[in-house]
Image (cartoon, rainbow, N blue to C red; front, side):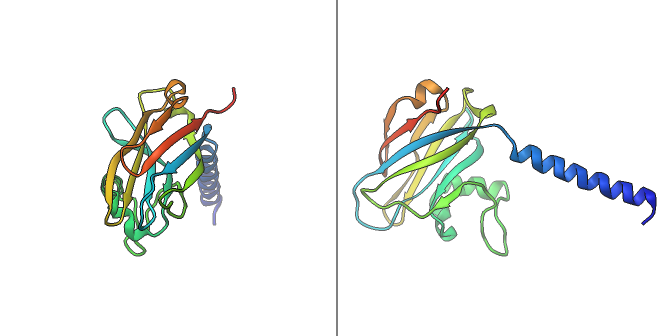
Length: 173
């Protein structure tokens, strides 16, 4: 390589490292979220927790319960978002999203989830959408839909579908 090509290559490497470092160091707010599922018999509930704006557009997926990718299409709004934004690989059919965090949650179970919320999206007009689906039992686009701010997250919520109860623990100031 000549000097110009070497400098160009080093600059590209530097920019990639800078970009990766910047995106990984995005300032986050950490929330704990207790989710209690209603009692039902059958398969575990798949659900996604996403940040949406005031026009119901997905901004970020922060948590997904359910690791078998073949059932993501049961969460119709979430699936539509994945398809529109090309957030899956055709060869492996696996979504290119953050937040896939574990197996489904069954009827009557309770889990404590750790959510990482970008600080830039907090205390705006954005909301957390809890979208749930259970094979052959139903689908709820807005099982819980709550404003993403301190006041709203200090309350407890009853779900409209498979979530019985939801409570957040705000970060210490």
